[in-house]
Image (cartoon, rainbow, N blue to C red; front, side, top):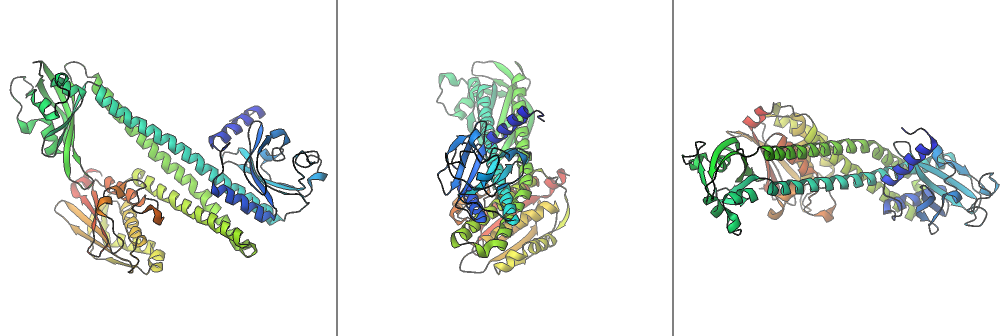
Length: 545
């Protein structure tokens, strides 16, 4: 931690720059909060001031045109780092402010002045929420407290912006990692081959095409290039049967590990290869192909190690990103709840004193805060679904569904919805994650109701030879066939203009099902809406204990 005044100031300015607010226009939410501040103080002028190394930057103002001024001329820069509200009834009589340019007429004729400091969670002062007037004035204790509350709200909005910037950087890094893997696969001397569901070769990377002499015919189809090579047993003489070839085995067996073979290249060279691969499965659980990676172990095993290291690093990066999202979402819950509570309190205590415009602003701020809380909560549930321990055990579907109905009772009653538990089923699953899965699905079913009928949701379960199948059917708006695969993508929405959600619920459901090594699909419903079908395999559940 910095100790000297110089170190403290440098750390404070560094923290300010992390938010990316300087020299950028304020968004509507910040402007709305400053309007509320002016209303609370009953003054015509207010400003959101940030103090950097040498300037006072007025990010947004009410009642006058904001500008950047010297920090030496700033009234807000005098004591903002103390963390205490400043209340000056008449600045012209104040021993410090009487000769300030904002008071003596050079910049303005300020008399009444009050400011609440903006203090970050780490204790750094960024600036102030400032209200002032050209006539003397005294604020009551409650007014001063509300100004302090608004300062906390603004810091919460700042934190959200900072988090967005950090998430953007993380997304950029993830994209760089993806492109790195693609470039690595094409540049290393590890042969990559892929086939469709019928075993027809669809892809060969540079190394694999080189073995088949593609340099002389670069436009040749992958299967033609592959046919130029002879695949042999490890003795280098006996042809390797079709059903024992790694790519065919990957299609038939799901996973192939360390399969050895010898390849006679188009040039007649014999090379020893070790192949690893797996089948490719669609979101609907259909096997659509397979891919293998072939390492030339006769020459050098280094390249295979590079590939494995790259895959490990990508997984580590993804794990850190998930942990980061979980931690940040959790840290945002409390300040958002506090800010929402303060806005509600503001409406309760002063709602009857606000004019129509101020009441509209307050309602807008409360609505925005509510959507922000919903988004953070959804992100938190999404992160927990991927990181929380998965503990399997015997679970009653009826008991879990009943608990979900209790959890959503307010929504169910408000929409006059009917939730029917058609079947009971005992299955092997994590009870907490299963409850979250059903809660998301039932909530979606009611939220996207059909305007011409009351919502009806039916939960059913059946045992299958391999495991269990759970269906959640509704009579709502339905999901068009063209959108039924992409709705499980993060932030995907069928109708974004409806503003009924954030596109995270079904992504969370997908993560929960993947934790159970199952599948989740979308179909039409006999009730006229949507059926979500979840399939869990008994052997996969047991293998993850």
